[in-house]
Length: 386
Image 1: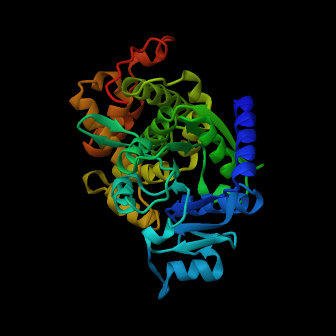
Image 2 (image 1 turned 30 degrees about the vertical axis):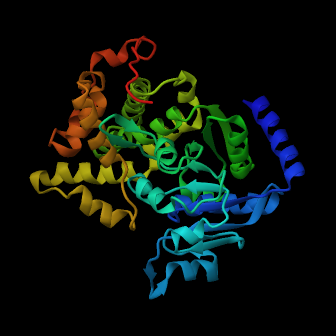
Image 3 (image 1 turned 120 degrees about the vertical axis):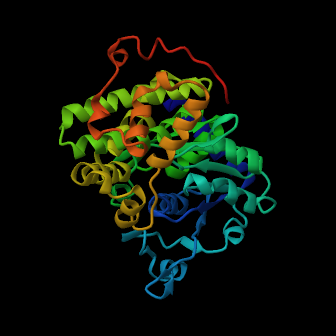
């Protein structure tokens, strides 16, 4: 991928030198991950001539200690609710009006809960610059009557614009602290991929480019379900050997789901940051794992009087939302409809533990077929959506 990146970046530099156009960035979403991404984007926009210095972030207005969150961000350069321990670059400005936030923008960065994407895009219709491009940082997929829908597909459907996808082992607080990590950008057009490479790549936030956007997004969504299993494992105090085994099994079913519903999914994408690395970090320290452990311990200690997912989410996540529980419901529904439950026994088990009272200890009741060497290469792919 390095040669593609170098070639495409060279093309970008020549295009900028000829046209003089600088790309203006608007970030849609100011949560934990959106704010960490704004730190990277703000620095790169200030550093690289191909980008306009000023970056706008659409921030859903909230009251914090009696003041408006956007006013607090713009006066202190700190998102005191979602990323309180880190300063945003001074060229990053919060804007509570969605349409105003994208005025003049040529690059859109979507980083909000996946269930709000379609509604947000509908508000943006007719308010965008000609030729605008987008990238999705959203860890989720939608489902409709035709099957699972990628976030990039939703963006293309609603806005008619080109969209890349970024996903990886990206815990926001660690990125904001400048700790080394990687991420993956999936692209359909290599010049557009290189443009977003330039926007995000830093010495401590290394980007790799892969052709195609499906695997990057599917892995980023399904790994949140697998992380529930890691939390159940921790609730049972089963240890790292067990958790590693569950992660491997989960990775197999992530790949199997991707190839079941989408074309051109490269096996090697599993070992990119958007695949194996993201699964590892989510299962070791992500919010889905943490809340699932608390849910599992409550089930083990209190039986039918256990605490609900909703109560634990409200208590533990400071206004943020779980992605794994919603994804588990949606995946189970689509697999039931398509009569594919037997192909995804681990994902089905996780759903039944989370929502149907199946014993927590059943998380390790693994079908023998998961130990066969042909479990990945032997999967027959049936494409029902693209």
